[in-house]
Image 1: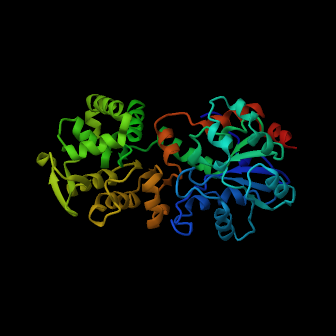
Image 2: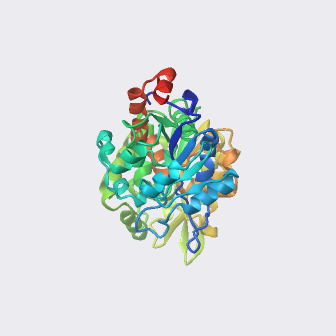
Image 3: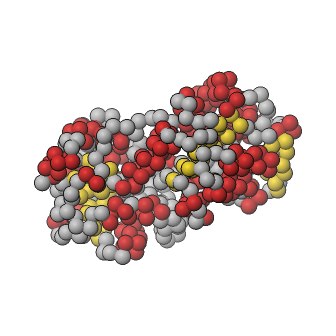
Length: 422
């Protein structure tokens, strides 16, 4: 990762600041109340460092066509509750209503703009050329009233859209506290892991986990990879164990056009790194709603595999106990059902009790850990599912590239960057 400017590098008192966060949160289907406010809480350290600025917050909520695609007025109310400070909301993004509200701001004020994905340019402008995003009305209008852009939306760092990368050449772009915590924790796990380093990869987004596995094995970051959930099922199938038509078809449907490539990658992993892959020795079936554990030798089955088997879960716990670094992503089974949450819960509890540095890659696993109140016992729970996985897979994130380019454009030294802002 190249040089990036942080909040420690600049003095922003008296400035007008654009702050991009990822406040996308699960909402109640009836009244849109917050079911999980952890993403809002995560950016409070950054907001608390900007109390003497005019702070304009940008965020999104879901995307067009989804039930929870709504205005961010509720986010303003939730922020006001969490901060104990007034947070104004304007039902506009870069139009006259927004500019009128911005003009009325005093130092110390916080203004939350409406859902940026209600702006068509945010949805349509996906060019890899950050400079061309400066031509959007979105960037032109908002950059004209701001002194600096702060990106604290790590969960969107893999996105390439005006609200993430459009200000690259228009304003000094700085990483927020959450962004830097994410990057530092993930880099520490990737570049300086305490051995033995193990990755526990599960869930049904098998292609994402396979990309992470490929990178970690190729770069010799990880000592062992323990597969669970849908990832384990496909590894078993491609290692020569017939998991049953119902399970094979489920994975095919989930992977869609990524099926062939993912299968090819798994075959190569099994061929080249078989000694580093730990596959289940037993699984739990959903037999008419009841849990039945069977050994791998009893496959194939006409029932769906819904969890890691008991013996395999104990094996996972043993590996976790002896690990120095753990990367955990994805559940071990259908944890939403009581009979099939054993594998997921045992692995999470083992990680919480472990002395290892544990990185949790966002998504369902992170939400579950937050809901269980175990986040403080985990080294790092990422706020970004897709962004975290792409980082772990060794891919360059657009949002990070933007911060690097802006640091060069507006000066790498603190004094020079401060002069740019004066």
